[in-house]
Length: 119
Image (cartoon, rainbow, N blue to C red):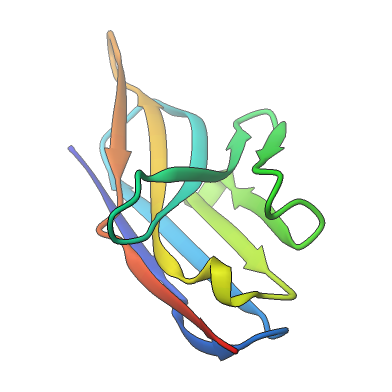
């Protein structure tokens, strides 16, 4: 079993910055990929950014140039640096890990952390 603990959310004014962190603990052989997703009430959860164990990244068009995903594989931690925040970035942000066990891959989600951007 793997537990994900997120931190760094909160309230910020438009144009400001926040840095989210998500640390994984538990038993697994390796991390295949990590990512951040977000969800607002009444809408589906959407991808924000992902990063593979090799460092390849992928971003939603809406955050390109403003958000940066990075990871510390040794500490099983993924980060999301969010700059130039906009009110439309307000959402609950969830981290996601895809890890490899002894035989299979498993997917885990964090509990979610609120990010609120005021205009």
